[in-house]
Image 1: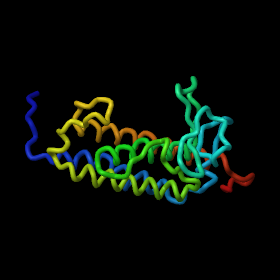
Image 2: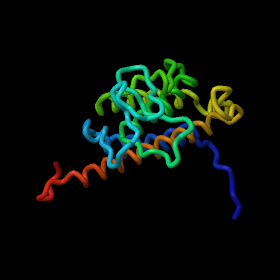
Image 3: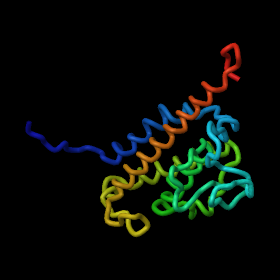
Length: 198
């Protein structure tokens, strides 16, 4: 079968819509109403989470505020189970905020300096704010900016920005799908004796 190049494709739009479709149509609606109980809930003991400073038993506790994010380097084997709080902390700070700072002029960010949210509502506010900065930054790249190397701030400096955009979108879809699954698990394990949800 002969393949022909498609002319006039707006590749920036295509890459943005990969995430926008998930965010607007699936993820954001699924995160509405997230409670603090769900945010911190762990179905197993010793899960990594976000905790008030000084209360964690994880090898490392990262963060600059009242709450810290459990971490270990090298990572334990097997890797610890992680709560919704931990996963949202990772997505907000390590996936989005760090890249927004490196590539789109947002304030400097790292797992060490991030102020992790102590409530579900706070985490969702952070997530929405960072996702908005990310999408605006990607949009501003246009087509030409997607072809520019990512530079020394990334592990593969010669890779084009398009590669980084795809990577970040995979990370977002992957981790936020995990969050949605944990919400489902919480819902189905918190029923009363008559079958109603608590």
